[in-house]
Length: 434
Image 1: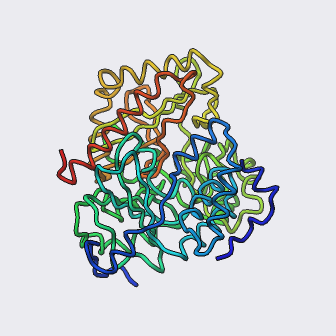
Image 2: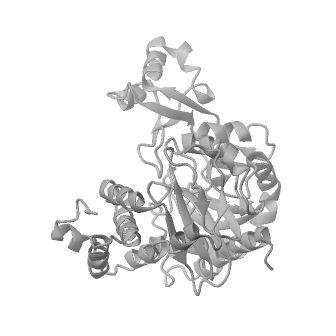
Image 3: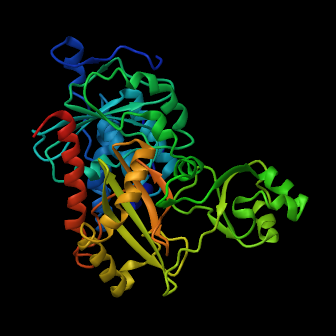
């Protein structure tokens, strides 16, 4: 196997069957003997933490290149290479190496701790860091062995899977993954072990317009209506004048618009008037967009506060609180490290979540959990002046991690451990382990 694209040493140094198939568990069969030796992964959380600490990955990278180009090729090393590339923003090359690794096999093993605890089978798919539930972060501190089984449209289910205590459907909602989720929907009902989040169609329903529709009748939740529309249709509205623009969510401007499939604020823009919309659409007639009403969710001090909440078996946990002057808040662009007062506010919110904010949000979270029908999901949200929960986005693949600098954010580890312990406890409960 030749790893294409990795011959340049400068680049290396700079990085530092169908759905209704018969499923069998691997026990003592001959085929099991082969598959039990699944290539082992280092784990995305390990590399992500090294990168966050600014460590040099050149030696590790060279080792994985050597192993990945050896005879026989080490598919686990190839997947490690892919992970490093994806984490460092080299998407095309990372996905190329990922595809080469998956051509060798589709099952990989990751051992947390001593690996003597729960055995989890995670059904995942190809893509970047936001394609699947971030299990490698969520299982931090455990002794879990995870078998990652990759599914694609061409190969949705394996015929034989590693033995496991509990399975987890980890594929997140995306334009690319939705056809796969639809394809495997019937087959998930045949799974021979306890299954968590095993409802593909409920995951694929978490599109931006789908979430808005699911929240439309929830009394304690507000998710602005979302229109999925082509660039040409929006241009036709502009040509139609004021009467046609009434069809926009909220009946007019301001609106926010983003291309389908965009995440983390990419190409997300607030549009104030028809002229600005025309400029945004220039050259995008063939694109499709999500359009929704802009909601000013700033507090009395003029700052915007956006939370990420992980919901595990219906119980909410605060993953972060980002505070910013900018309406388009993401934790990375909020510059929380520059504002001690904002970090203090986040610390208080995390420390008091179980006794203050959590109980206040309990009705809204209960309504969302019933509407989504999932064992685990996360939301990006804010609180409106009337107390309702303003939901921006929901998915099963939002990044939840404990990698923030513990000197600047000393309150984070304890808060994140609550999330991880609850998640691990849910898996154990499903598996019937105490």
